Image (cartoon, rainbow, N blue to C red; front, side, top):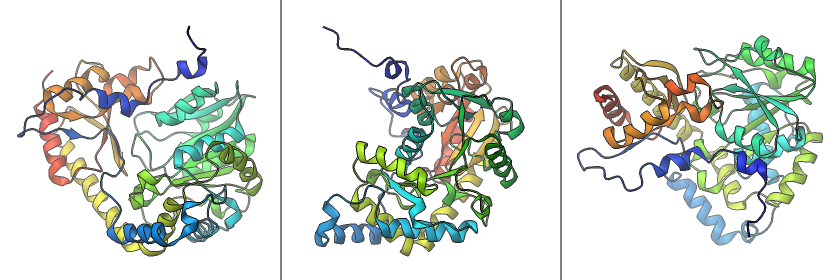
Length: 392
């Protein structure tokens, strides 16, 4: 007997990172050419020792750390996010306008559940973050692609032509995953004005905000007294504090929206994990200089990768920033085939552009994403050497 299967789930593509990991199963990498894994951006090292000590202290001596907590997160962490974001963006955010989630992916899912239903439409710039697309597919919400062109910067005027009576939101990721580009403040303002004018939500995912190359606020949207009701902001603590396994994310939105988000979170996870939140709060209060050092290292790796592409004249670096580079390759091979051959013939694991584009989009077939954050400048040099030497 075959049990029933939700057709929306069946129609959703497999998790791309997990698919790519299967490409290296059974492959032997010689000692003089170990695998260079640039397929995923998650930090591969544990949090700094001081943060781990704070987690251990809480685990041993704080009984509440092992119990259910508030559905929308620890009040102290919500207040800290509100205060730091208000200062960073020049705005006025209340603690009651912050929710803590089990990672930023859950933040996106929770927010989207309050916005759209089956048959509605959401605009995603391409190349898109594949987990956003996967969730929309699971919910049978139509994903409307917004092509960004060679510069990978979306255009609000182009987006306006895609809005229909079924459009419920526009989603922007900056610094971008997978493209790496940092959206100009003027771009975000134009999208905010468009969303406000057309009565739809603007979701801004700033998971990688701590690694933006620019100084100062990347936009002024929270300084707008009318941000509530239009702007929804997403964040992840995973990258800045290496808390990937603890799954801690955040949503900033008006309190009315968060009352609906609470219903979703209570049903799915009841509450975010206590220890992860304790770690995030400790990090926010104590690791400012450490995070600045992490940012400086990522910017140095970015510079090394940009310089390295100078040795790949036939490649085209479309975007670079935060943890990612996004490039066009010069080979007469579809990017999925090329990515698999790079594993066995060059010892490099990366993701093809087809994983970030609509099915059948020709651009994805000549594009690749390189998640360079987990290899140092020397490793980036070896990566460039292998790409330069590869001959299909």
